[in-house]
Amino acid sequence: MTTQARPAFGTVLTDHMAVAEFRDGQWSPFEVRPVGPLPMHPAAHVLHYGSECFEGFKAYRRPDGRIAIFRMSRHVERMRQSARQLVLPEPDPQQFADMVRAVIDRDRAQVPEAPGALYLRPMLIGTTQNIGAAATPSGEALFIVLASPVWDYFAGGMKPLRIFVEERTTRTASHLGVVKTGGNYAAALGPTLAARREYGVDQVLFCPGGEVQETGAANFLLIREGKILTRSLDSTFLHGVTRDSLLTMARDLGFQVEERVFTVAEMLAWVKDGEAALSGTAAVLAGVGTLVTRDGEHRVAGTGEVGPVTRRLRAALVGIQTGENPDTRGWLEYV
Ligand SMILES: *Cc1c(COP(=O)(O)O)cnc(C)c1O
Image (cartoon, rainbow, N blue to C red; front, side, top):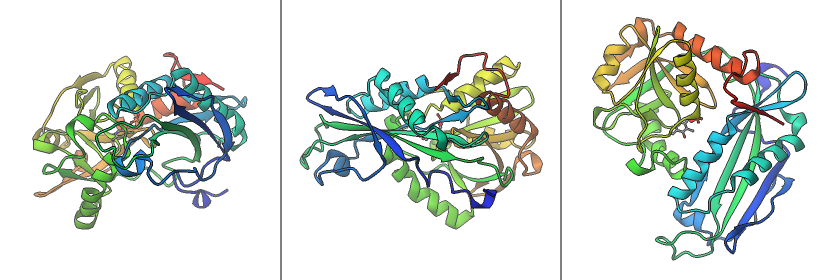
């Protein structure tokens, strides 16, 4: 297949999904079935009150046919935390991992060669039938693991991103920033489309009150030779596994990693000669070329190109994921 013919990220699924149901206080054994419509009552809790959370992580094909899953246990724990915060039944960690492995094993032939990957998308929804349950949790739920073959995110070259710096609105409610729940993306969509229209940007960097947070679906890092600055963990933004992996790796490479609150003013001073990037499972690390504020445009490192340190850190992490670099931290497990 040529690069042009490859489907866009997330638009195709593999043939099978794993499904488990929570009822009468326990999870049913899971089933692997063909991907297809879910029978759902129109009064289901999720359709009215947004009781939903999800995860996203990747698995990579090895030349010997094994499939390596990247940091699955972190994603399992994050989803259980999302479920707790939304008062949904928590997936059982063992069953969660078994469902992921079962889907990968069943559709093994559909996992692309690296740098392509299989993107895993577990999702949890509240299914209790009650349209009067705005202030009542859903006692019944469905937990489903979907898988999607994805190809090299930067197959067309690493295009520097244009980012709008938004200081007036928030991405979501402050206590939900840390939860991977559908409503957060619905909340960020309007401001993101408005900024695209008005400023021709790719994404919005939410900086409520002048403090730099993250974009609609990725964490934000300031990078320069030997140094990284990123916001310290709190409930206002999503704790990315990619962020954690990059910081861990960078520390081992001798970088000085600073995690603290920082302002838009500090960020704009940094990018006069430093780099900026977004981190997340889909792109791993994507370089920012231009920061757009209501006062004007700021070319990152004067050039507006993806910086060399950003490229080097990305290549180092992708190398671990695809098996070119050794996995010295036990981040991969094999199916
Ligand atoms: C998923 C997500 C991220 C990135 O998390 P990873 O674990 O690195 O994929 C960052 N911010 C938001 C809002 C997200 O939804």
